Structures are given as C-alpha cells and as structure tokens.
Image (cartoon, rainbow, N blue to C red; front, side):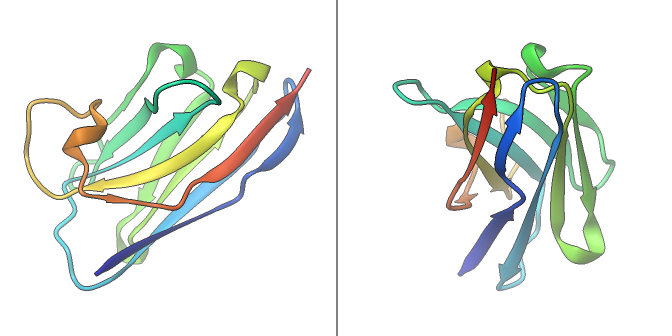
Length: 125
C-alpha cells in the first residue's frame, strides 16, 4: 500500500503565500509523475501542476502559471507546491497524486494511481 500525506494548508489573505508538501510512503513504487489537483465546493477536481520524477519537468494550469511552483525531493519521495500571490479563487481542497505509468496526458485525474487525503487552502479577500 502507498500512502500520500499532505501538509501545509491553511488560511491566508489574498496576495499571501502558502507552501504545501506531500510525502509518499509505503511499499516501493516507481513514480512517473507527481501532481497537485484541487477541488472547490460544487466543482470538479481540476489539475493544478505536475512534475516528472526523473527529469523534473513541470507543467501548470494557466490560472496558476507564474504564481505557483512545483518541486520535488526524490530522496524523500516528497513533492512541494509553493503558492504565491494567492487569490480567493484558489480556495479549494488540494490533493497530491502519484502516477506510476506512462499515459496520454498528465492533466487528467484518471491517469493517477494514488491520492492523498486532501488539505484545505482558504484565501480570504
């Protein structure tokens, strides 16, 4: 079994910053990608950012480009999401996810095998 544990969420004012982390533990897995998704109340879970585990290549949804940065620590099996210039529309439950296999797209939640429990990020105006 693989466990993903997120930390670092909370409440922040608009324009502020938060940093999320997600540590993977459990049985040995071959990580292909680690990503962050988010889900606001009444909305579908949406892609935020992804990083390739070997090369460190990153990709972001347009709404967070230039504000969020995804990074990883391979030795710790941990992925991070630095969120700056936060906006009220960034308010959501944020989930980290692991993908262990090659597929057509990095942005679909259905391509990811393992999920964290989610962590709340609230941005007040």
